[in-house]
Length: 197
Image (tube, rainbow, N blue to C red):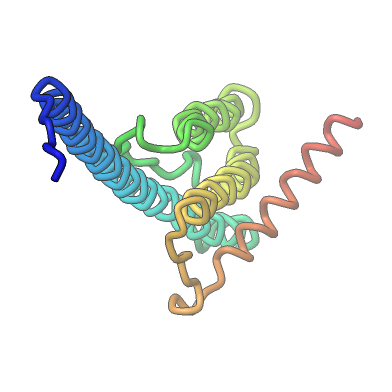
């Protein structure tokens, strides 16, 4: 029988490299697990933030649709019914818990810019205070359609991007989405006609 010679140096190298490989694999799996956990947490934060913003924009849209209805009643009744609106509804402050860094950058940019767009539209209404105050309800009506539907589209885009179920207008009993869309289209046509004049 041949004697087996043990090379302790070789055994030590194998044992050390196995321990190193095991430690490296363990640390690699931990990093991978932590990365996936953080990625899932960020995705959850983005979805929740998108939902919070969508609900805020939908509320603004509903308030615009209601103001359009009131303003049209005011204009068609020579002020006997309805309300003489001169301001866009309030777009409430963005919730503090919205994680803007977790959201898609292009959606964040659109959502953050919308407040300034609405400010510009309100200034368009305010212009009539000095020019012809009787034109304020009509100017407001136009901008309610523009801003209301724009906010609705923003809410829809946020929900769609993060696969959040859409707002179901069928449960409301009034298709204010179609109502806003029609007024938005009318306002766009009016602006196009004014540019062409």
